[in-house]
Image (cartoon, rainbow, N blue to C red; front, top):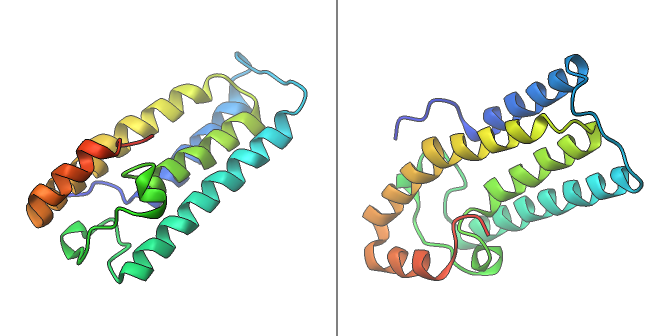
Length: 150
């Protein structure tokens, strides 16, 4: 798998771009009651989703490393993986959505969409190909039962 940029770096780049967007573009600024508590709730939900996902990988004794999906020793389909085939990336998205909400700039929604496109194109699709090679029909049945994001 030829990964251009590791997922945590993509999250950091997207977050930095959101911060810069907020500092330089006044168009699309917003604020509303409960904006900060809602952002905190999204942040906590995203971090919890990531922690539960990692715990599932550790419990299954398989790799958490997104750079080497071919090293996966078992297919994890329980817990948060019943809700999403990619709960860590969903958690990343929720953390970035929390930042976008906290910053209060609609332009950052475009950056969220770019994050989803990039992660899906350059990370999720290659991972799915590797998992299909490793687990065949078992993975195909899982994909038929559980959506990619939510």
